[in-house]
Length: 438
Image (cartoon, rainbow, N blue to C red; front, side):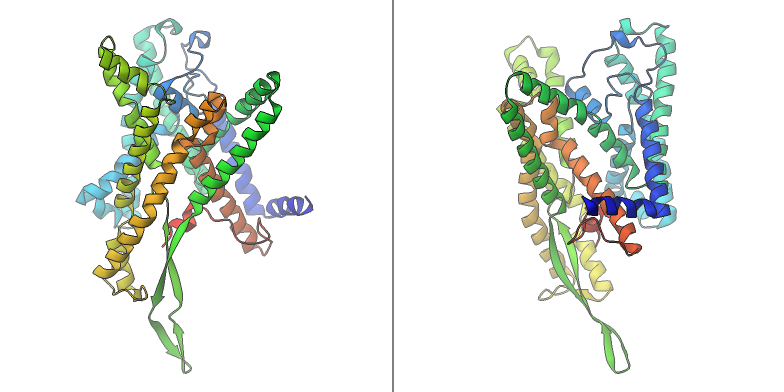
């Protein structure tokens, strides 16, 4: 406890770090306040009590703003969609590939394209959100005026959230966009925990609640291990120069290939596809086949749903890893800088070796990611409330673990630069950014 207090004192004794932490807290408070300001012209008493399906997934990321019909109702999600589209374009279209390689000017151009695309996506999603989710009886003004004004407000809210995320990245701690998503997810944790403890206490299941918390602890530790796990490929560099009769350079370094290079993207892609069967089958719900698809793919606890979900995650993990990690580029970069993997010829052989290693570590990574994604279903079947079971795995837990590790790593770097002790007595906090660097 004494070391913890000393560490907190050291953190706030560094003026720049203290300012960044306070800036981050201020921006996050503004973001949370916007999640409770209801759109003008909406009667909040007539809104649905709880969002289901894909709406429920979005609401869990937005900390209730979606369900509240708030001015931040779409949050930062359209920006993430635009970023994914631009990222895929940099792989598929030569023009975007050239922009990516142009350095700072190309990056600014891609950022500008992402922002414009965000506005377009937000306008489209806002119309769909206002039409599909907000009941007509909840609108107390002219419907046409409400849709036009609310679409503008929602788009402005998303752009403001994007600005908040950029301010957190520049003036605060951690990645701003990821921080906004995490705070939306974690805002539901206290109420979920209290509800779970109360329900188990009323049923005389205190021991069962303790077992649930122990299980949650081990699940979190397993996700931390998955997030940090890397396969280090040793790399040697040729001697740099000779000075005073001694050779300098030639030190051994490592290429850290992540076991889970794709992060949460496979789960997000797979989750989006899992809503399509029920959506397309709704017009044919009167038939046996249509009713089967609607009931099966609307309930995340069914075996067919979870098996399909797991298979899609495994496939998307290999797909996303293939488009984000390019062994040929890594091999060419090593060759240009005089680096080589011991026992492997530079060039094509190095590329094939890296591809082989990447395939071998991606398979167990994809299997473990699929297990983490379907854990909430097993937790619900084991008696955990649906609201609390979402923290036993899935996208929510992976995002929270990744963002927290990155934030702690950044704080520790400030402490070590000022010659203070780190956050742990031994070892270092390793986030996603360190493992992703080559």
